[in-house]
Image (cartoon, rainbow, N blue to C red; front, side, top):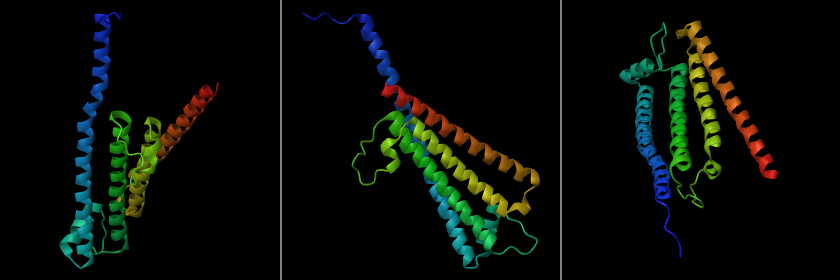
Length: 201
């Protein structure tokens, strides 16, 4: 005849369950990031509409674009190649940040909250099939480098409107991001190699 479980063990079982269930507290955070994604989509289309209107000669749309990209010129402002390039780079920047949000929302939910059971789904992202905390960390670092590169390129194209100090600091910060990503990737590779060696023994 089996004996009933001790009262202390039942209390201990309740506590781990409570702690494990606390992962659902992250759900509102991911929902908030989805709302932020909506704001980025709206901002993207506003900028794109202004660019199209400026291409058709709308002076007010051109002024809004020039103000948003921080472009200044001694000549009368016009939709030249530099302005178009800066606006397009801004749109690419929005897309890359949006991609970063998707990685955080989908990868973070799958890793830290609950499985999505997307195995076999035709639209399952390739990277999601082997995502974990380490892979997500490396992918986020790589995405941040890409975003920083776009910002740095925008600054160099519009370098005449920035001081040497700003150019130097932006370059230094980009290099710091690059070195940090390399360090994260190297650490992840070392830890993965150590785990394989332990499993081999």
